Image (cartoon, rainbow, N blue to C red):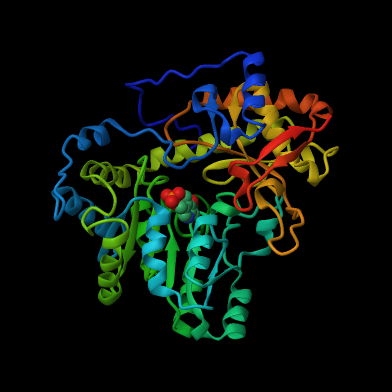
Length: 458
Ligand SMILES: *Cc1c(COP(=O)(O)O)cnc(C)c1O
């Protein structure tokens, strides 16, 4: 399945506009060189995130008109539950308004003060919710995940030896649960193999620990398994998804990714009825009554269809293929990127791209700014600017990697847009010694990257 065109055509368009270079300069000044402060309408191609930014199908838009907005027991809820039970094989399903809502409901039921949650690499809101419940989020991913030039097929796998060591070190009773993120977002959208999920499940069973999935990109992970793992080439995506979830006691999901919707989330519990009842009880004061979970009936309808559409192998081939296409254009021009390219984004190694900028001048932020100035394209920094300061000493931490992340929304941009992004970056690459570093002039105490103000270093 090489070069498969998108299995859809376009029936509605949304204009985007490239403002001129002087205007872009002005917008950068007004935004204090923080791209989070730009107005989206001043962005030509927006690669900030793949979360909630995808395009829905005609079937999803049509279904929204059929939303049953009853407060309790709506038809749309039952339709969603039915679809989820079939796809995931978990008996108890609850909607939530998005992934972090699901985490907020489930995690207090699983974590006791001081317990550890071991994961491959925790997503940032996930880590925050574990810590809010008094737990410690510990990463336990294979070493090669940190090597951007290592071409291994499953760089999201958990390190099994380290997992056992952690369990023995803390004692199984101190491990609240194990959480596998598929694909591993924080490691660059790298997939987790079925063999690894199965092996983690065996460790979990041996020590009587529960295993959950953080399943935002479950279908993209299944596609990688089909492409890369022995024994799966002839299986269909649904069967692979079913097997992945069969090893888990439950899951949380941000449906804003592979749910192919703009808002939504899910909690699944495979068979533990007591836990499922506690989830429903916890939903009421937080997300809403258990049959709507913070979503409108029409949102439940759109999600019920999105979850089916995302399993289409032709869709996944075009989706993963488009991300790889952008990565390959950059590689061919000698631009350093994380390899292999993950499922939802291309990570440009800005530290290597801009060798004249030390980490305290935030090379990836400098490149993010330059890409907007050059082309009106918005990416996002994943490096020392995002990492922030040591909470105790206040010292700036040094990220081992300085990335510009180009995150591709689903079914939204064409390969032509990708070519424009690549050409713009190649242009910058050819005169990269001119790119100036940045310093922070004002920052809030936590999560500073969203609102900090910056200036160029002359
Ligand atoms: C996006 C995401 C979340 C959080 O979901 P939201 O819908 O943004 O609240 C959690 N885990 C992973 C892996 C994610 O990608």
